[in-house]
Length: 285
Image 1: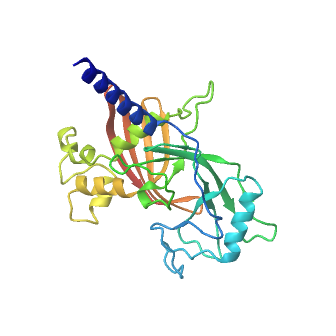
Image 2: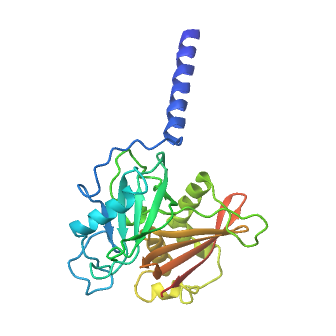
Image 3: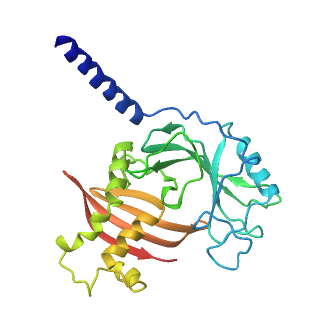
């Protein structure tokens, strides 16, 4: 009996160890081919390129010359390989605005990835491209679709976003820094359809008179606004996160050469139990 108990304890400890190791931060150990040999690019709003930029949501595929310019610009700054490049909406070879270049993650576990990125502009300038200072990105997986060691071009809802900025000392209204655990909990809450489908239980509004923002997306669909709101949030990439006091605003949508093109904002409040939905809005620039 004592031996069986001893074996059971060892098994439990082993399982606990595996669980902890799967969630700890690790240095990225990805082996990536050269970006020019195996270009990984996310184009526009869907990830797929188009040979024509006649529609605002289309992008033209990178030429071999453009791929070389991107590779050269980044290799002059770091030896870390490029994971993928994101091309904004309506970007053609005749007019390449800002491009976002993501290096392989240097922090990773099953739910969270983080690494460095650069913004490249003026790709076709005779003086050469402009490259920003490196900035930190984060990526949070869906609860039921955790990350694995294979780095592929992300899907729309999985696109990385800038790490929320840190508080500055003695500066009012500056966004707080959110920890890895905070970001995972926040994204899990915002991505739960129940948050929006159950709004009728927590807000005194009628189906015929939805809140500002929801009404605009409901007018283009026959679905109930709560259902459409949930689908909209789940399908959009994150643009940024900011925190002010106990309120957090999550911006989702797409950008066009540094300008917001079509964005949604979900505002939540931090509570002792986690988060509470406040409001939703939409704006187009």
